[in-house]
Length: 183
Image 1 (cartoon, one colour):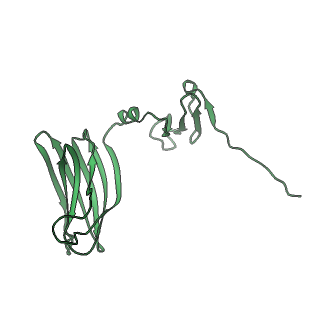
Image 2 (image 1 turned 90 degrees about the vertical axis):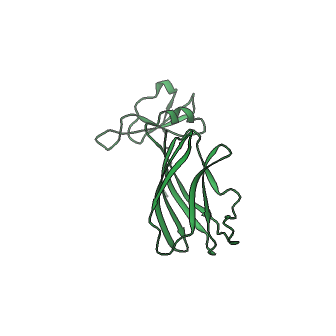
Image 3 (image 1 turned 90 degrees about the horizontal axis):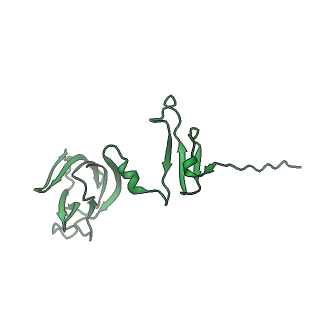
């Protein structure tokens, strides 16, 4: 006869005010606030700080967490498709060809890559927003076969956006970026 063993994994749980220092990788659930935490571990193990780290849930106070950020906010944009300007009129056939920067951003540093028809261009764009307008530098080396893709920050109806356009070539492009906001 086969031996059957049932196991159950349990995690610490209780009131948020009673949350102890969790063991490295141990989960702790706060019943009253419905927040989830994981133990950081020790400095000797490579943890940047001793303590518990909140795992985001639908009940997390995002505004409070953003205010705790010490340094620039960073995120990645992966694989935005830039359509070809098939008509050759300088207008990319994309109804919303840009993405928004937060209005609170006063400066942005963006490392990006554009790939079109197997050719890749990599660059870094530094953007500053102030009452005088937008100032930016785009540092890149154009490949031997020019991509025909232009990206530029703009103010559009009071919103800070990054727009892009392409020349007619018959090929769409893919835009990938790592963006850091400097408040």
